[in-house]
Amino acid sequence: ELTAALSARLNASLAEVEGLAEVEISELRLPTSPAHAPAVTLVRYDGPWLSEWRVRWQPPSSQAGGSLTLRGRKFGVSFQVVMAVGSVRFDGLVRCSCVGLGRPPGNETVAGNETAAGNETVAG
Image (cartoon, rainbow, N blue to C red; front, side, top):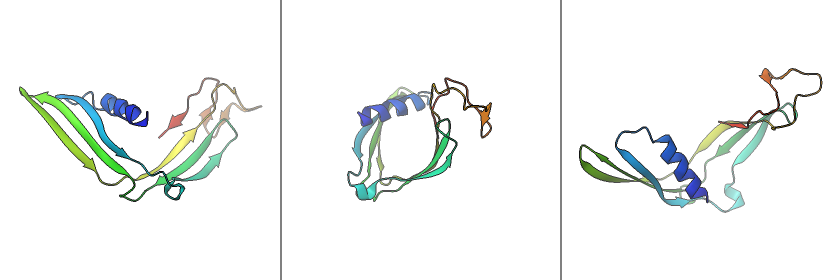
């Protein structure tokens, strides 16, 4: 399920690359031990309307990695490239807002962001 979702996202992201027809995750290794779980730290909390979380994750190379297969055709020649991913590292900020809660009582904005019903969760 995760592999299919990541493959779909990669295909959508690389759709504009000329000659590239398909991206497939050939192999995916992710740690299953709680010892290698991401470190998540609350950075900012403005109620359920907005929160920010710092996520850091760098599992050992023996526990995480995989390979990608790229297929396409360029200048009349079909190609297939297999790339190995030897290490994985993530360090970033995730912003979350709850949809459908409306505005905080008595506030038009929360930390500079408008909080109208229908906001979507932002991850980045």
